[in-house]
Length: 176
Image (cartoon, rainbow, N blue to C red; front, side):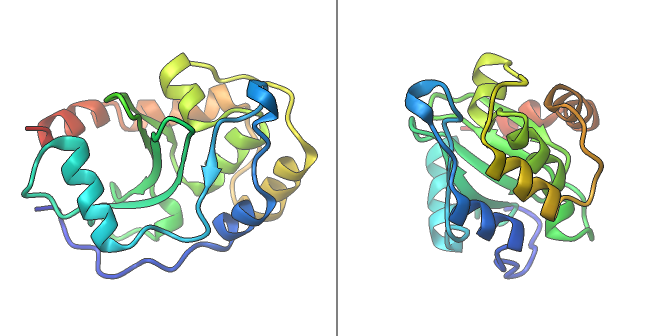
C-alpha cells in the first residue's frame, strides 16, 4: 500500500486550461500528449498502477493521472513531497512499454516544458528536451499559470531528475 493522500482529486486550473487548449500533434512534428479533462478516478488509478506494475497490493493513491500519449503512456502528478500541495508534486511519466521518468519538479515547471515544445514521452523515450517549435497557446498558458520562472525544458528536466534520482528504482521496487 502507498501512503494515503486523501481524496485530493480537485483538478488544478492549469490542467483544466491545458485540456481546453489542447496540444497539437502536428502530424508527428508536435507534442504527442493528450491532456485529460479531469484526473482519472481513484478506482481507475488503482487498476492502472496494478496493471502497470503487476502488483495487486497497490492502491494508486500516490498518483494523479492527467494525460496520455498516443501509445498509452501516462503522465501523472506523484506524491513525493509529503505535506506539500498537489501542484508542488513532481510530474512523472510511465510509458506503455515500461519506460519511466521524472519530467518536472512541479506542475508549473511542467507547463514550461510544454511551452518549449516537449512532451512527457519525448523526454522519457527519446531524451528530447528541445526546444522545438510550438504554438503560442502553450506558452501563453504557461505564462498565465506558472509560479516558477521560465527555464528551458532541458534545465527543468535536469533539475527534476537530479532531485528525484531514484524514481526508476522506486517504480521497479513496486513491480512484481
